[in-house]
Amino acid sequence: MKIAVLGTGTVGRTIAAALAGLGHDVVIGTRDPQATLARTEPDVMGTAPFAQWHQSHGQVDVARFADAAAGADLVVNATNGVGSLAALTAAGAANLAGKVLVDIANPLDFRHGMPPVLNPVNTDSLGEEIQRTFPDIRVVKTLNTMNAALMVEPGRVAGGDHSVFVSGNDSDAKRDVAALLASLGHRDIIDLGDITTARGAEMILPIWLRLWGALGTADFNFKIAR
Amino acid sequence: MKIAVLGTGTVGRTIAAALAGLGHDVVIGTRDPQATLARTEPDVMGTAPFAQWHQSHGQVDVARFADAAAGADLVVNATNGVGSLAALTAAGAANLAGKVLVDIANPLDFRHGMPPVLNPVNTDSLGEEIQRTFPDIRVVKTLNTMNAALMVEPGRVAGGDHSVFVSGNDSDAKRDVAALLASLGHRDIIDLGDITTARGAEMILPIWLRLWGALGTADFNFKIAR
Image (cartoon, rainbow over all chains, first blue to last red; front, side, top):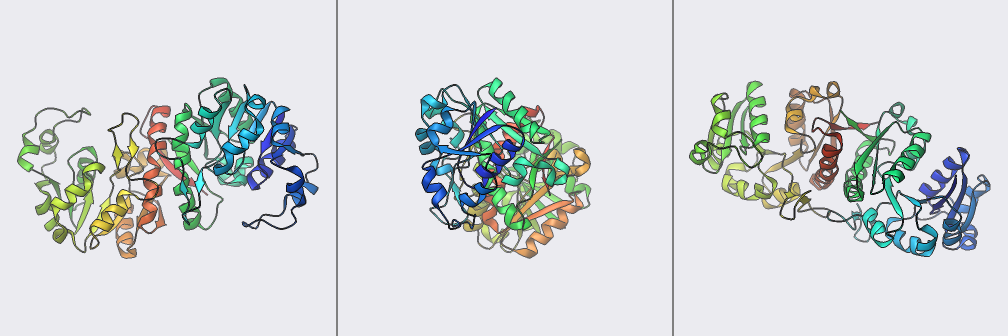
């Protein structure tokens, strides 16, 4: 499958590499590929410059948001949550129309210090905002409740015995995404319901962030024991 | 231990019965004991009238909020989240001062229809509101992330292999509450940190409510796989 991953951070790189490793034809979308590849310094989070990562992942193409989206069968939103609507606007509604968008982003707002808060929250979610803004995209919220390494290698914790959620209005889209999740090793895929259930999936982030601090590691995940 | 459970709903009754069963001296606090005992009809949720429950749980006393709190070593807030501050005000700051308050309530706001939203949320929590309003109480948020039956009998799901969180500013209070949780059968008790971490514990409710719908049962719980 031709997959565009929007976003060049840790999540975008990790997802892109894993999907390429499964044999998909993967392109990473960014605002300005030349600028992205020209950076030579780690970012504020200490993440290595993209060009360094790309040297060892040459099978993943890099393109402008719009070009990446236009050529893809399925699109992954791995951009920063506060910049997701702008990135999707740059990708272009026409290039995205009818396609499945796997929305991994969390609308974390760091403007008021740590820990970040969610914006939107409670009566709305980023997943719903994207679906409202781009009604022709088939949005499926998923994977936002765990760290990037676990998204693509669930077996690294508890033998993979934990859960992943999907939210979306389109049953076929959720079925396609569930198949993709299963191909990455996810076994307990829980369909929460329509895209309004993305509120719950995004609102799990505050406890995730505190668990990260309490446990001293991000290598954990929610399992729904039942 | 002398324990006051504030709240006569399903959570209050379930906790009171379990703690009495463990040998504690338990009193249920309510605004007006005579009115509570006089009701003969099920409530809007179909819960049986309190008097009917009390007939088979005569070892649990019933008293006004203030009298229940005054005589207790430890107090459990099992009131409706929107009424918790009023109930604690009725209990009386002086009667609660210095005591551990186990805060189980969720600030669910049903005024805008289903599913309910949280109020407060994101930048505040009910746990923090209670701690701010009653600075001499030692508030520990816990147990609000699962149904009442699981609170007192974790083994009824997955052999008890799931998690419970504690949030609070007072380490001794958290240690006492952890001991109480262990006596109820909880094995994975995770200290999230100070009372501001109650935000995360309360914000897990929206996905809990959607999981209830998706799974068709409330008999599930979050396990932190790690």
